[in-house]
Length: 222
Image (cartoon, rainbow, N blue to C red; front, side, top):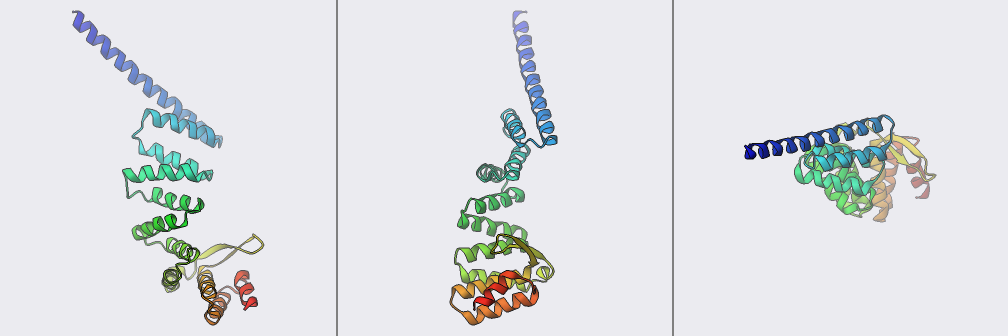
């Protein structure tokens, strides 16, 4: 009889603990949802940490936390969480892309390039190859950058795509992607002291987007 009583007591204690955890999780979930409606990222992040403490293997919670940090440009924690998610699921493309973007914003260009190359192999996206080409240019991998720029120029998908570029006065301008691709080729040729090819590239850029100020300025300097 005493043994049965102890067993019953044990079951009750475990049940209460389990109920308490569920109750605490629902409270934190409610706080999270309310903070999202109020656009309060700090409280949302705090609630997510509390929920993760209760359900440490819940990848969806970590995904939400990663997105919260990404949304407020907190690159370091967003990157760390993306890597943790990728360790559990190497095919999580959202985590992989956030890993790429955060590394780039942290100024870790070579590491970002490596990640973007992995992402491109999994997605074959033109915007990813464009970013790869630009990073290769910044890292002075000129031959690789030129090869990828030509691939993009010859891809019909880039024909009517627009990109936003920064100008010398820190304003931005929307231009056709192909104009930017030829412009980047011109920058590479300029770095290689090949003024003739640089001029041809800048002229092609202006031919595609006649008001492309960056290309016009480069032509004025040649």
